[in-house]
Structures are given as structure tokens and as C-alpha cells.
Length: 121
Image (cartoon, rainbow, N blue to C red; front, top):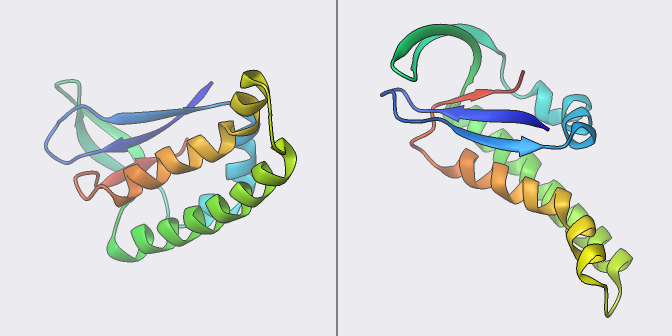
């Protein structure tokens, strides 16, 4: 599992979204990785100042990420409904909705205005 982490400015605990390696690779090759630019920023992490590469969640970056994730959620929802059919098993449902669930989790973090930075690496 790999993490995509969202940070606030005031030192509150970050929010990490754990994603499987295949999802992380897909995101890295998608437009998700092209939105915003990671720059070293000094931030308070667990009580200590650290300089880490972050994407600032400006209005523009937030809007572009929201658009990307929204479009992918729609695309993935269609694929999931087609794949699962009428009566999937619990395991088929869990396996089939993993990407969709992670996309929703990322979207909620992007939409949360308390998060000001995104760490993709």
C-alpha cells in the first residue's frame, strides 16, 4: 500500500489515503499527477518542521483535481455496474468497488478546504 497525504497548515494531523500499488501507478500515469507542481515546502509534521514536496491546493488545482476525480468516478461507476451485474458476491463487490471507493475518498479530501497541501510521492 502507498499513501497520498493531505496536510493542513496549522499542524493538525494529516489525512492519508492508502491505495494499492496498481491504483497508485494508474494515478501516476493519469492527469492526477499532472495537476499542480510539487515544490519543497516547510510544514509542521508531528510537531516537527519538515521540508517535503507538496502540491498547494489552490483554487485552480482543487478545481482541476475535483473535475478529474469526478469524471473518473462516473467512468468507474459505469464500469463497476456493468462488471458486477445483478447479484455479485460480497468479495466480488469489494474487489469491484475498490478503485471507486478510493476515488471517492480522494475527492472528499480535495473538497475539504482545511487541507491545503497534497503529497503524491
